[in-house]
Amino acid sequence: MISALIWVPKGASRRIPEKLKLTDDEMKMLSEVAIEEEEEQSAMEEAMEAEDAAAEAQQSQDEKDSTGLPASFKMNDYDEEDDDAAIRNYIGAGAGAIEDDEEEDEVDGMASDDGNVAMQDEENDDQDDELDIDKEDVEIRPTDSVIVVASTEENFSNLEVQVYDENGALYVHHDINLPAFPLCMAWMDCAPVPLDPRTGPMDGSFVAVGTFKPGIEIWDLNVMDVLEPSATLGGEQDDKLRDVAMPKMLKRRKSCKTVLQPGSHQDSVMALDWNSSHRNMLASGSADSTVKVWDITTQKCLYTIAHHSNKVQSVRWNPAERTVLASASFDRKIVVLDGRQPDAFSKFQLSAEVESIAWAPHNPSTIVASAEDGVVVGFDVRINGLTPLFHFDAHASADTALTVPIVHSRHQLLPA
Image 1 (cartoon, rainbow, N blue to C red):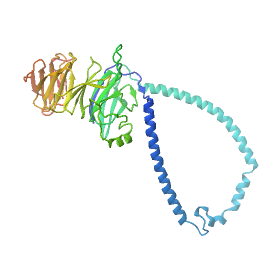
Image 2: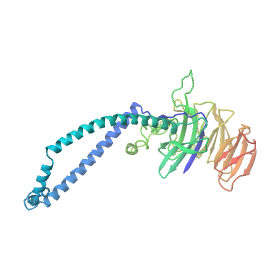
Image 3: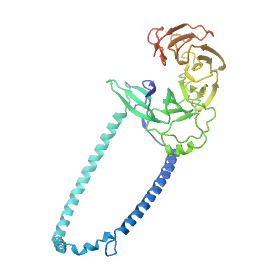
Image 4: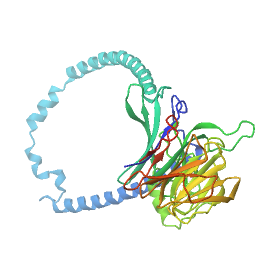
């Protein structure tokens, strides 16, 4: 099941993504878990060996032959050995045979030395060829289009970084394992590291992921085989190990009461939107009925908005006024506010639960929403009233997604 997908802007991906490089703390953590699992395995093997030894001892006792000795000695069959055959074998392996074997060993040794040198050269050539092939396999060309797909199969969830090349081929470049069912994503180019006032946020290619858990994980798309997110906004406190990397350890800690980080959402994260102008800011909506604005560089919640009375399904920054934020909820309302004054806001009522919202790119003061009853409606956010600019029935059932094309007519909508 595919639950979310996003495009990565062309040129944002590293041409040759890095392989995972573990930090000292991660190496120590992995080592401790490996030692613990090895001790458990050794204890289990020792117990099994003790059981097997006891069973063999009992079987040996039962199988003693008439001599009173263990059956493995086969004393009853001792006289039946073919003495003549044994003598012939001994004579056949005489001195002449030994000399022939020594000469053959010398010749084989010389040939082996020459062969080892040749084989070593061939192995070096093969390794060079493999490195070249590996680079070609992982290379993301400037003409490639990259899309991140969040999917779940049975109880396993992951992100697939897929590449669509100029030849029309679509393939999975690499994937990232997730600890819970993914609900939403937001791409960003701001690294979750402390801000340098002289240079601004550090560049990169990252994706924020909201799941049924209260934490927001930020993953580096330019690193393959990664086990841990680059950062987590909110979520469980001291959550050093995750389901994907360390399932046994996590299960043990699950028995303890979960403690959330200060400023964290209290429930599933259902909506995310990154502010491309204020690059360190990320908005999130949750099933706990709140909207939060995060500082990516510090991983702290800047402020919490509690203007909704039900689950928040969608959040969107205005494309022109980049401090203006809209949110939509199951309470059938859209809330629009300025992040500089979050306590002052406007509300717009819909006929059903709001499924999706989008700002009109050609008229940034207009916000368009789709609802559970299939209705699409547009409001002028400068007018705090109940009368919409337009209203029409797009579908007979829930209209779960909505987009406004930038390159087409300003009056064209694409509800789904």
